Image (cartoon, rainbow, N blue to C red; front, side):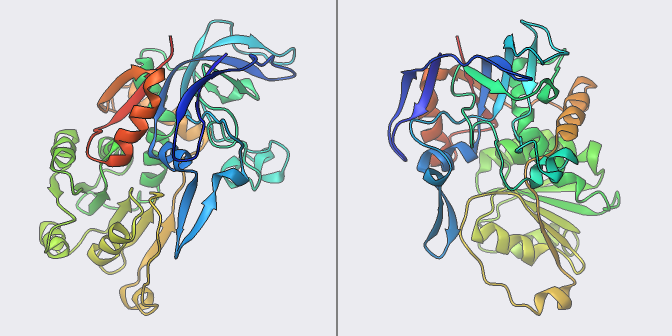
Length: 351
């Protein structure tokens, strides 16, 4: 098989050949057709996630080079193990990549996201930058009939990450404001999903004017520049005192501080982005402002099925998608890292 792989952390992305795996047991061999390029792939390419204060979580502790990332996968069934059933050779599916060890109580209790020994495709195991991936069980394969494969693959991360975060704000009322901070691929999906999942009013915030414009087209009532001099005042003015909740899809110190400053008393801040860094927050902020802060990470297999169903029902407008040949993965990562060059998602296409 062909693998587009990271050859050097933060450096060369090249093409290599490797033996095509043979599935055993319940495994399914998927020939990758399309694979979205996510900002997490940039961190993986860099070789670390920023923990703040000069600390890093090194990718080398989890995988060896060369390594093929890519977790937003659509592919067709090339082969199955003797114990795999329920899927047909040649059938095309969205692959759910957020897989656990399969043995612990969390995995057997349908809480794979909480597994302490994850085996996520494209993060811990070969992902969709390769033209074949091994999926441990057919249950991780979701049909996407009626949807374009270049779009459907993005639901495996961008879609379910947005959906899962939005579910944490479902207590909002119709006249409450929800701030969505960072409207790249995932944040833009959240803007589009917000009406179906939450039903509140939406204000988008981004430092990029092009992304703010797309957010307005996608359904946001207002779009603000969170990098402006009076960003907090403008947010409170636009929402009549501050949003009831804010979802930070960037996860930088600046966007986190913005989120905690703009929400009203009793507000909720949901942190999703993995930009990295650290913040200092006065402890009295929590009781004084009755502030709640929670994290949100990707989504469950049921979330993926729900997002695909919403898209099939016409309740989720497509995000902008730019298909490129898989061999241009290095360019796609560079464009995404620079910021401002990518609106929506770049999707790799395997021949």
